[in-house]
Amino acid sequence: MDVILDTFIVLGKFLYYFLESLVYKIIPKSKKDVAGEIVLITGAGSGIGRLMAIKFASLGAILVLWDINEEGNMETCRLAKEKGGEKVFAYKCDCSNRQEVYRVADQVKEEVGDVTILINNAGVVTGKPFLNTPDHMVERSFLVNALSHFWTCKAFLPAMIKANHGHLVCISSAAGVIGIKGLSDYCSSKFAAFGFAESLFFELKLIKGSKLKTTIVCPYFIKTGMFDGATTKCPLLLPILEQEYAAKKIVNAILEEQVYLLMPKIVYLALIFKQIFSPNMLLALAKYSGVDTCMANFRGREKANEDQNETEKDHQS
Image (cartoon, rainbow, N blue to C red; front, side, top):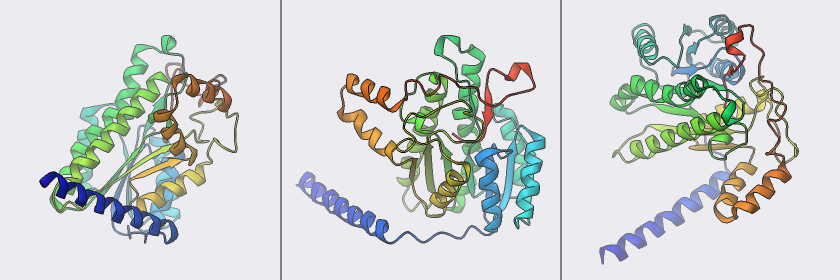
């Protein structure tokens, strides 16, 4: 009897949530007020991180900007203040260094307060075939793209749980749900970031009465310089996204407390194809869409330092 009752209950919930989602498609969710919220953005020194900072500044949020590039981070700080950010704090932080993350996190708590919206945005990409990818770059991809999320969440999540108020944002990638040729270390690290964020979402939601929010973002390539040289064969179906468009969509998803945001929408369809198509069908589709050659002319952002020419750091996924 318990099984039958539980089945009816879950079917009832399915129907309710399905109708709810239809209503939200017609009538958009109201956007939450982030004025006074302490928003921490990793990888804020350029690209999507910078644009998100500027948008949150205009909404009255208190900004905490992290980046290993101190000069770029200070420029973001200046631009955010120009857009109305009254309280903007910039910190140099290497997110690949666990001890530095914890140290700077303690500094933020002491000087600014408890972070209420955490946006894990910093990322690196190597863009080489697997056997040409140096071991240290594989390690760095995982340190920045995935493990840093563990450390920032460990640093700031306890205060959110205690206050029963907070929002975790993971900037993963379309390459975090679909494998792409020439991005073995990037894809696997972004898959890890997605899995961590989704697992943590369920863990927090199953805490009775928890009001903590999660948003997981999976965009295709964005024109920030991080993926310079990457191409698309089907720009109408699988476009390389404009920075402003991507940043606007991400901030909107956070304000509407969406759990998942995949860009462009065809990525949702690709996830379904993965489950129902045969491997050979998927390979044929990859060739048709140009996913097999999209990294053929990859250059990434040019670096002055020769040691950093093997990887391209930016702040989107």
